[in-house]
Length: 198
Image 1 (cartoon, rainbow, N blue to C red):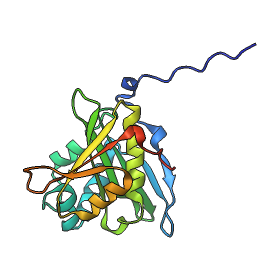
Image 2 (image 1 turned 135 degrees about the horizontal axis):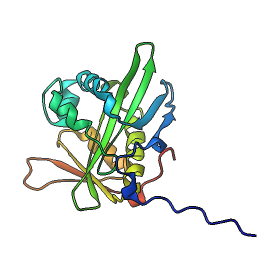
Image 3 (image 1 turned 180 degrees about the horizontal axis):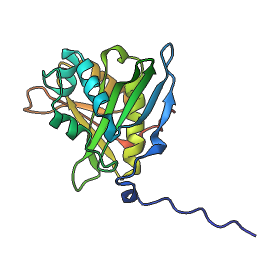
Image 4 (image 1 turned 90 degrees about the vertical axis):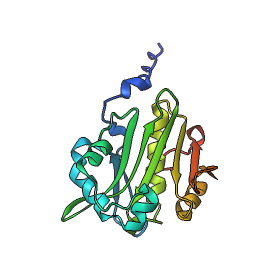
């Protein structure tokens, strides 16, 4: 007697609006506290605000392309407006006696009507260079692929050589956009991305 076939996975569209608990995991970097990697939730407002306020002016400018040192309520509402399908964000969280702290966030927003999405990643200054950005981007890529997104693309400033070099190591193609004043565009084919934790 044969076993019944396993149920088919739900179609990607069925993931819309459902918190993706399957993306939650713990990452243990060498010589540093454990980091919980999970999707951003609507109740993360205060953590998101404190994260942005903790970034250095240089990181704010190079990663977010503005000089503000705090986020408005409208900015925060936009960052937390996630449907876990067309718009999704993944965060790295550390825990200590004072509570939870965001140390890095990666996010995507689908380009309407396509299988492409714009992405961004920001890691707090004290965690840059430790591998957190790669862990967050792998998790974001896995989530995007499960939601019918084949390509992630983003942009950075030409003077931000560090993120451009990281993008090349991670697998992004990197090129300067013509007539953009030096804007660097990065793109990755998620169908070739290694799984998170690999």
